[in-house]
Image (cartoon, rainbow over all chains, first blue to last red):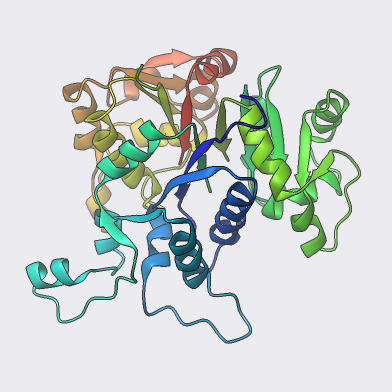
Length: 134
Length: 96
Length: 119
């Protein structure tokens, strides 16, 4: 592929946003992809990466808020933040609809993260030129 | 051609050791996060890393070195922008 | 053309959820992609050792799900021969039918994949 070509990237993020640097690396990589003029098809969060989608994450004021940074980037560049639903439910990340179905009193999915099936990862994998994992 | 990325310290994980075993002749290796210590210390994979460096296939992420106060004794020190370019140069990426 | 995807399993089972969730991902991906290759290397080979009794340690026994790979037409299942022998595991002790590969052969197969996911 030539340097001038716009490359479509999808990212697979598995790191815990509070305790692993991988979550921050993915964000910095994503920023570099966009700064180079390439495209992000979407970001798929799996394993402990799904914790990024909790609206209840509240780091101290002198720490970087990784979820907020993802939201800002995704909003500016209009790509989807997909969160695996089964990995989310077992880690306590729930949206309004799942909470109603499961009879839970609370939900905490941060907007605009989306609870998706693994089929969405297959879709992101199929539509991109490069799948990069953190 | 695969871009192998290793993010765990060679003193705390077998990721680098296992990765080096799976490197094919043209593959590239990028060290990031805690794995960057592998280019400032002497690891069990030292001679293998030197060999990779000689064939210009060893890369280290600059900010991960700087964040830890480390200096690279080998490898090409690259930015995130160059990391992106490496992923484009290679067909796929394998995260260790 | 459908992308060839390689899924690499490197983690021991049960100590973390990684192995189980990687298998969930593999089975789900197989519904959308018929060109999956699954690799078990390093501690990943312990996932295949028969007769797990994961319920003893409050974990889910996912070995029945491994059997479903065949049902889902995931037939390219590769195991690192070196990783088995260093762990004193013979191929007869594995819970599913696999193809044994040397490190070099695994390298060759990995080169053929368009995308890799590693767990």
